[in-house]
Length: 94
Image (cartoon, rainbow, N blue to C red; front, side, top):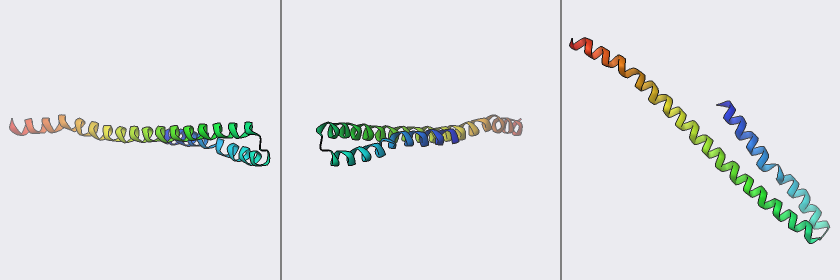
């Protein structure tokens, strides 16, 4: 499970790293009113938002898979008990 958490942490770092670049670029744009800088800043902001959304969705999916995995382990545990319960019942009957 720690591997999943490391993957989530890495995704978070990747998604939010451009934020500092956007802030720096935004400061530069306010100093230099060049339209090209503003366009680039806008595109970076869009990419940052898309990255953050992707990380959020991936994190949710990983969390869902972990929960399903835990449920699967519980079901498997119950299924493994069935033969012994069946055996005990047949012994008490016979």
